[in-house]
Structures are given as structure tokens and as C-alpha cells.
Image 1 (cartoon, rainbow, N blue to C red):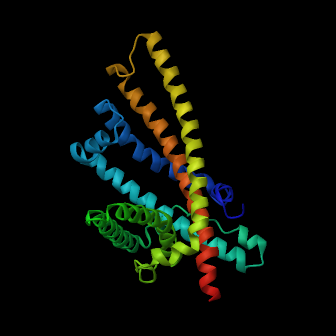
Image 2 (cartoon, rainbow, N blue to C red):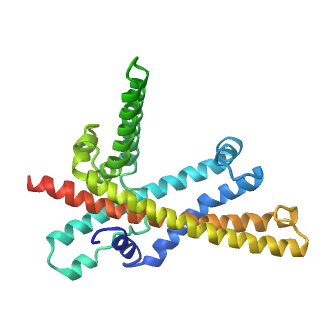
Image 3 (cartoon, rainbow, N blue to C red):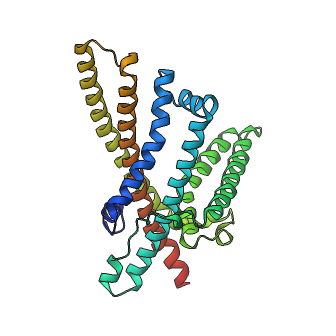
Length: 289
């Protein structure tokens, strides 16, 4: 399907300087994965709660690194969304096929990535507040006498509305990096009827691809650990022995990095598809009106 996941995957792996761009994403994944691997081995646990406690409370420097890298990934996503919309607009308005295909959607790796940083942060804070207030309001309705069941239904609808519309609101922000044009909380209800069916189908595809990815990555991870464990057992060393701790960190970091990198790729393809729906259902419709 044009503008869908598979076209997104294709665009993600085409263009100028594509190898350095993907190497950059891989390095970002590595810098997030390393603290998580250290935390997992230090706690002898894969629990996210234990990992977060170790990273953000016991050794906050690791948490600072993860936070900084996560912000850079978020910025890269926003610029990717901007380029995706620009490409889709050009695709509809330009007649020069060579010019259209020459437009890369993968952002270049330079300091321009940090353009609009504070706008993006401000926009995120505003919409996080909106979502918290919205959820609190609908959840509080569950405690109104005689309104428990309708309140639960209302809460479900509110969460569904947020999940379906927020990607499109952030895509709208990415179009021109404008807070003013995307600050109204009513956008959720304005966008919902326009994108509802397309968004549901997109999320179903996203869930299907994610499940398939999880199955494949789990099988590969299990196979790797089984082989390493077998080798370690035959050589007389445990996976958590002091002599093998550095190898364990490297192994877990490598596996986590690869998984996170491909998760980012799936996320980029998802937002390319979101940009396509946004362009067809919201952007083009508003221009025609």
C-alpha cells in the first residue's frame, strides 16, 4: 500500500549518506542499551523497575546518559516526521519525479538536529499536561455514584482517543514546528473522526509487525543465550561468573542494541505511515477547504 509501512521501510533505507545515518541510530541504541545491560547484570534481574531504580536512583549518571540519548532520538523522530510530510507534499504537487525521489526523509547527522529543540520540549510538556488532565477528569467520573460503568467506558474511550490522535498531533507539529497552530486540546476531537478508521488499521498493522518482530527476536535471543550458555557450561564457567562479567555485559548490550535499533526502524516506518494518513486525511482536506 502506497504510503504504508513497507514504503516507509524502503524510504528509510534509501537516500544519500544512508550508512552514516543508520550507524548514528545504531550508536544511539548502543548508548541506551549499555546502561541497561549494566543495570540488569548488577541487579541480576531483567525487571524494568529494578533497571530504572539502578539507573535513575542508584547511579544517576547512567540515567542522565539515557535521558540525553532519548531526547536526541526524539529530535531525530521529529525531523524524520517533518521530512516525511515534506516528501508526501512534494509527491502530490511536483511533477519532476527525479526531484521528488531525491528528497531524503532520513535527517542528516549535524547540529541542525537540535533546531526547534525548545519548541519540541515545550510542545511535549503542554500535551503531557493535557493528557494527564484529560485522564484524571474521565477517571474521576468513575467515582460518581451510579456512574461507575459509564465512567469506565468513558475512560476507555478517552485512552483510545489519546492513542489514536496523539501521533497525528505531533505530526502536525512536525510539519512546521509550530506550537501555536497545534496547542488546542480540542485537536484530539477534531482529528479523531477524520483519521479513526485509518488509524485503527495502522495500529493493527503495527501490532502485527511488532508481534512478529518480538517472536523472531525472542527466538534469536534464546538461541544465542543457549549456545553461549552451552559453551560456558562445557568450559566450566557460569554466565554470571566474575571472569565472564565483561563478556556478559558486551553480549547483553549487543543483543539489546540490535533489538532497540530495529524497534526504532519500526517506529520510523510507523510515523511515515502516520504522516501519509495525516497528509491525506487532515492536511490535504484543510487545504481544499
